[in-house]
Amino acid sequence: MIDFSLSEEHHLLEQSIREWGAREVTPFIRENDRRHHFDRERILGGMAALGLLGISVPQQYGGAGMDYISLGVASEELEYLDTSLRVIMSVHAGLNCLSLLTWGTEDQKRRYLVPQAQGKKLSGYGLTEPGAGSDARAIQTTAIKKGDRYVLNGEKSWISLADVADNFMVIAWTDLEKKKQGDPSGMTAFIVERTFKGFSSGPMKEKWGILAGNTGFFKMDDVDVPEENVLGRVGEGFKIAMFALDQGRFTVAAGATGLIRACRDASVKYAKERKTFGVEIGRHQLVKEMIAQMESDYQSARLLWLRSGWLKNHGMRNTRETGLAKWFATVASERAAGDAVQIHGANGYSDEYPVGRFYRNCKGAVIYEGTREIHKVMQADYLLGYRVDRPTRCELPAYSEMTKSKV
Image 1 (tube, rainbow, N blue to C red):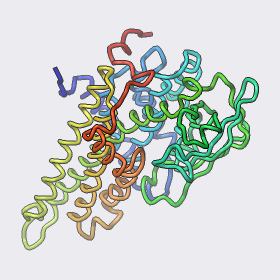
Image 2: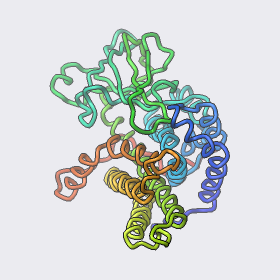
Image 3: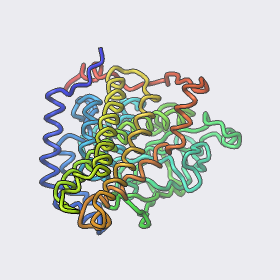
Image 4: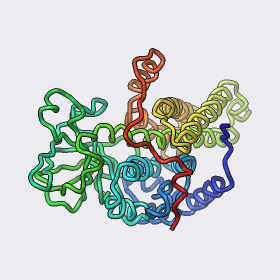
């Protein structure tokens, strides 16, 4: 039986994030956003102390051992505070850590997953390139085997945490003949450390939104990566990249749900304070309509990510469901943010109110980890029978399996 009610543990998690956020995030987020400042010490220290950086990693690998619904709860609560916080969960906890948990060797888990889950190391994900976004097969990064190592060359762009992460999961071509044919079975995933010689990174300063987050690029010029840092098997890079996106999209869906709630709450508050024509603007029918739409979108988006989380908890394939949740929630958050600015009128166009920041932040999620157009096509293909998900070599362990081993 499907049960979407939150447990006491989930509610305690919500409360702990809200209390920490009110103390350590809300008073500083507007200034950090204005300064384009990634407040690493305050934010990462607090998230590590709360166990968020390894929230759904088993305790035996340094994590909190909480279920995947908890990952969604945390993502929703963090984006309610600011999108930049949820991005950390998407990249570090979702894309990277859960991929390591599922595809990594025991040695890789000990060397990389444990310190990442403990919050001692921060991790990133390297797929997108200057000429490759939705078309992942268009990446140009190569990894040429030389003895017991691979030599990586290429550039990754629009990478969250590019200038601050310690370890990266990088997708590269290892079979150049398959690269010419566009055959994704020629791709391989690697664990690359920032400290490897030939690795360099820099920030992207022209961003429009998520200004309190770190986004940038990194380059690899003859970077030597030991053979034992191949994640999964040689040739499984594309599968692993798509698997990682399933996890990231889940956090994006839950996070966008939090942004809808933030827009709703800010709009309700303002609608009860601001008066026009002698009455609160909340009395005007068209303002009510916008607020009602936010509530409808919030409740729908929440149910969609909860369903995906339930499937993850039971070790079931959820690509279709998670894609739908990501698509709906991000598009709905864009609508909610636009209406929130409209409700605030001229004040919505001012940095003195948070809704302008919400509006700038929401757009990224409609684009990254699968554009809305990509997700529309995917959902249509499922219905038309053009797309059928088949199990990958590995699926996320069911929550019941995660909790069998405790330290």
